[in-house]
Image 1 (tube, rainbow over the protein chains, first blue to last red):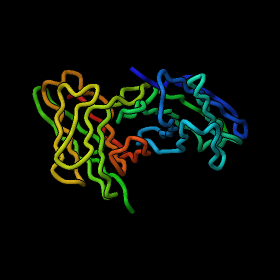
Image 2 (image 1 turned 90 degrees about the vertical axis):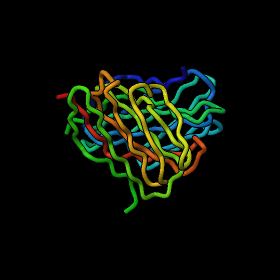
Image 3 (image 1 turned 60 degrees about the horizontal axis):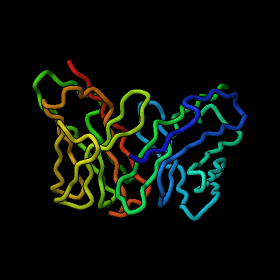
Image 4 (image 1 turned 180 degrees about the vertical axis):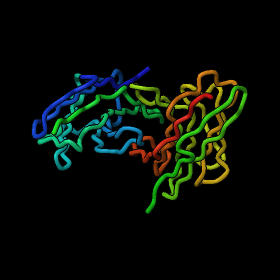
Length: 111
Length: 114
């Protein structure tokens, strides 16, 4: 079945550096979403990019979408220790209702 | 503030026991979802409801049951038929039946076996 798969599984960086996470998926989508999850908490929606969009920004977040490669990337600029969390991509199949979540990238930002 | 409330935060189940996880939202959302999350993994859909008095099985519905008698509430029962229930359970909602909507999540219930 369709699934977003994040890469890398884990990422450790210094505060102030940029963090890039990638997501690949298998079938056509209506949109792709990125979520954040702090340890032991629920997911928080970060950004949604539609299939006809190529790039979207929100604060320190930049998301790109390449539908020809079926991939997306999430860039967090000037990372902070508070950015330490797991980040998930989620996709919807065209014509479907369900949202499919990947396994996530665990980001650790060292102060 | 509007949001989703899950209770309890921690729950322990004995062998052969059914337990019910509560999920309440005051966002006036039509659609609600239950997910299961195992350590280091993504979310797997258990059940979802697009409107009151209607719900559908997700990818891992066996051993679980739900009801949607009120718009605000979508309780999940983990039955004794679910042989490996230890996991983190997340409830979510979205405004409309259209899947192209960001989902709002509660803070989860962690279920363990005694």
